[in-house]
Image (tube, rainbow, N blue to C red):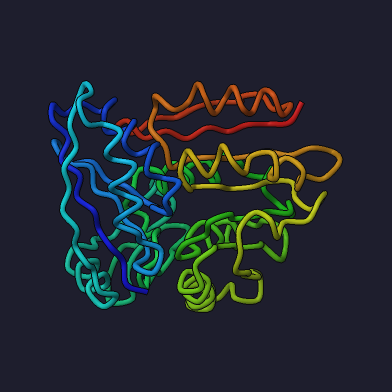
Length: 284
């Protein structure tokens, strides 16, 4: 799948202004964002991109507290892995889990070793949110054993693989809306010898069935989390469950916690890393 990168120049730039722009254009189908002052980079599958719709949304900022201009770049599928391979260094989480590429050899062994080939999918282990989510799984310890677990928005399947290796119940369910991610998660599960422990499905939260899970991992983004949180809660077993969410900034925590509270969930803890956040929520 080819992507479109829209580089939005915000003047004067502020993180708050960038977040406002991100929130306004997210409904157009943009599925990931990066911030490089004074630019907000927004990414969208090419077939979903509508420049006329983008112009309509951005026109709303004209004459306001800041102005927004943009350029458009087409990113071909084959470019992603080339960039990833040139930059990917092994990652060690809590001195317990090593995340590496297939071509990394001779690394010191940790208790758990995960080999990931992203194939254009998000989740090499480098991003702060992925590291925090894996750290949360490690902290669960024995509480993870045998639990019915869902990895929502699985990307490369790195969290599913980690959960399977750490003893989550079989099968771990890995769901993503992008078929490339589903194939990537399948490949990585087999590569890490846990293919028999992971079932992948292509779709969004609407495919989740009621009363299935003890734990749900959702490392996605704020807007999708807000839209789908009620579906996640319905997917917990009647005895309740734990929801681990990430993919958003620290300043987004209050609105997500407020939404969770209305759905009968309390905060067990929050974590932060370079302004990225992770929250563990539990049902009352």
